[in-house]
Structure formats: structure tokens, C-alpha cells
Length: 171
Image (cartoon, rainbow, N blue to C red; front, side, top):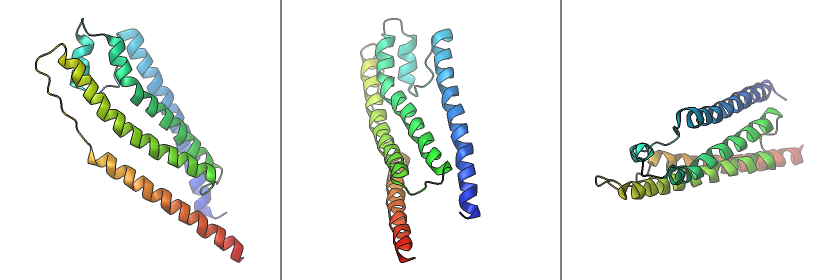
């Protein structure tokens, strides 16, 4: 195996460790904030924080609205560390690595959908208690571009695997 591949394997192992430590840190931070301070810091909506502080709003409903994106975050971290594990062992173009990569693409797509639904659900729930609610859906073109690039990379990886197989047959 050439030097670049060995370096990539080492870098993948390092990033796998960083990713696992980051995932544990995120989980511990969220648990601490909720248990000690009674807050949930994963939300990105002002309406969510308005409702969280409002006594008549049900925090269980608010957490349920956040749950799908939180689930995709941790599921994405799982598949990313698994992909980096395959890279660490030198399996760059195998079916297992491709499966991980496809999971990551689908999770990114699901996250875009869940974010849109989350914003809509939070705004509708906010509207039940406050008059000044403006219901809007923001579609981030950056996320759509990222998904399209990930699909292109998946196609390139598949093509690279086929070329590698042809080269092995030729030799």
C-alpha cells in the first residue's frame, strides 16, 4: 500500500477518535443542560425558546418536535465513525464503506426534511400561545447542494471501485 493510503488510514483513525469524543461530549452536554439547568440547547428556533420558557407550553411536546433531528444527528455520527473505521482499515471502496456513505446521504436528506417539519411544527405550536407568530419555512440551498455533491461522490466511488476491479483483472 502506498504512503498516501497509509496516511489516509492514520488520519481516518484520528478523526474517528475525534468524532467519538465529540459525540460523547454533545450527548453529555445536552444531558447536563437538561438535567441541571432544565434547558435544551439543540434547538435553533426562537419560537422554541419562547415556548420553553412559557409555563403553559408542554416541554414534552417541544422535545418530541426536536427528537427526529436529534436521532438523525446521533445516527449520522454512528455511520460516520463506522465509515472512518473502514477507511482506517484500508477499505476505501468496499461495499461496507459504500453502505455507510449511502446511509450518510439518506440521513442528510432526512435531516433537511425533518428540519423543515420541525420549523413548521414549532411555529404552529407557538401560534397556539402567541399572536406574533410568523410561519415560514427556510430551505437551505447549501444543504441541498451538499446532498447533490454527496451523491456525486458516491457515484465516483462506485466508478473507482469498478476501475480498481478492472485493473486487478488486467493484471
